[in-house]
Image (cartoon, rainbow, N blue to C red; front, side, top):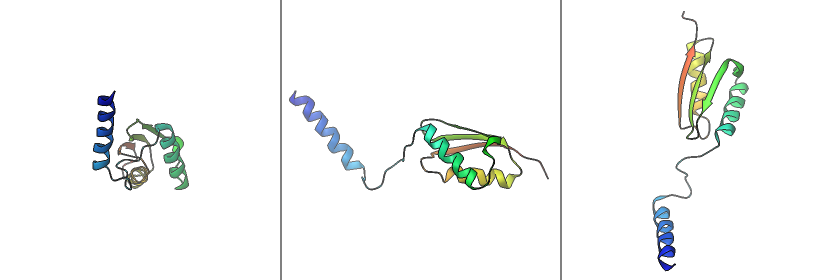
Length: 99
């Protein structure tokens, strides 16, 4: 039993040495919560989320696709998603009319 206690204390001491408790390395949110937050933020920017397919995995990787009005709108959507809390990466596949 003492050996187990020692290992546990060693792990706690090791993790504390590398982590700055004031600055989390990664802000985790469940995929469903993150998707709701992203959709709400896009809606606040007058973006029709019903035209978008947003898929999120448990690591915060977002795959967004759909029909948009322009390349500028596609870039704007990507930027809004990138700036969302707990997003690790964004991959976009948007279709827009060519000028």
